[in-house]
Length: 374
Ligand code: SF4
Image (cartoon, rainbow, N blue to C red):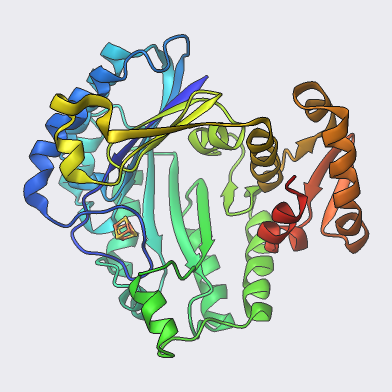
């Protein structure tokens, strides 16, 4: 079981919190498209003995790619890889790109899952983040997708916005579940280096909420979505039964994947590879081939730490038997020793030889996992 990720790096404008590798020069879209088709063919042996169960078009804004071209990309993947009969094929879309005409065209492609970057249900929150869509457009986009028969729709939300009130967050949660969608990804706003938000924060023009407020927003969200039939299967992800993101679950379960496009990462079980975040280099792929990619072999220590980090994020937790079989008794005893204080404080719980983060533990997951690293 394996997945393919395509990084479509173009965006019409940049959101103030975003540090993904993105490009706003639309003139490069056509040359990028040709380079992408070339890379699909170039990497055809990367997942040679694997069946591709998931394909994910992310970015950037892959909804800037016209549906006919999306199909050509997917056809090229089918031609070069062993794709299962019913793969999950997701596209990330900006609500602003979703007209009824676009959705009708999209429905003719093999895309069967749509992830919308809705982010907020107040126009002033969207404006604050420099999102280009409005709330009304997002509601209409979901409606158009549902009218066309899409029944695997995910939305993204952002919490921890400066000065967001309790009432605003409550209303946001209510609006989200009223949309009758199947999946929600919700992330706390982070201030990544060199983003506009980071600069505003450093100059004192923007103040993040207190930890207590963020904690309340996270806990309230988890409680509310769970009471509305969403399963909290990963720290930031909630899905209806049978509607988890298979693609992301593959990442968290350390399955192999191939990343295509600039800044995309790949993993084959032993090595990590990453295409450099450089469109000029990427466009030279036909001449330079692997000059665009770097790699690193994962040590046992890397693999163990990664297992802890990804496993603890999910409701499947970390498995002591897996640790003994894939690492060693020594790794397990070290882990047990490091976990003791978090078991006592109630941030971690243990059941059937597995360890899981509790809801309070999820809120400080970065601290816990870094404490557990060897
Ligand atoms: S649309 Fe998405 S990828 Fe593009 S700048 Fe905004 S958050 Fe980043």
